[in-house]
Length: 113
Length: 114
Image (cartoon, rainbow over all chains, first blue to last red; front, side, top):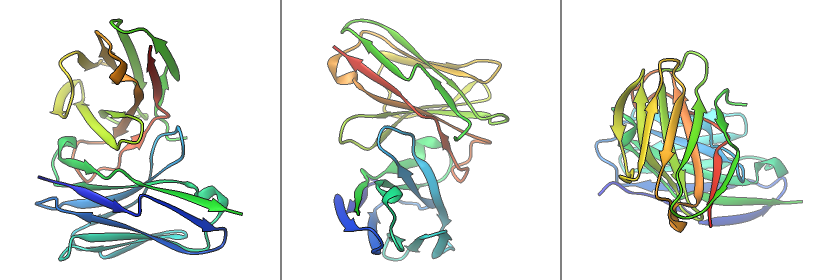
């Protein structure tokens, strides 16, 4: 069964600190992996999309890594800001249509001043 | 602002009732996706339409149905509502239908069934 597990479930850090969120998946065959940021009560916003051949992708202070051999991905946030408080969702695709997407439950990140 | 619009923003109704949620995709996007997000649950894919045709189906209940109209807007119909249907319902759109296309999400409709 295709699964995406994210850890930690929740995380609290101080403003200005760095943090790393983890995503492990058992989805096969793998097509691409996405990270989304979802503010409370709002729709998810795409941060990065990585295919099998990409192992690092950055979007400002967000850097995603992918190890397709170990089926692990991480999202590193540098110099956190209060606006980074949100849920971060890892989504893995087997390709094809939307029924091939498997969503993680997300990591709830809180940045404290 | 993703360019995807959803109405209404909030909806409160009673068990057994029927409601319709509306979504307008980004200009030029042909694919529309519907998702359900319950409290403390991840996003659950319900159904996808591409240029008016149903393209993919996920965990959509038989009480739920959707359609995409010639102007590409989409509606999700939920009937015989139960308490457990209370959730955020998101619509997303993408330019095409392949799994690599980025999906842009709307602001969601919060449905409360009393």
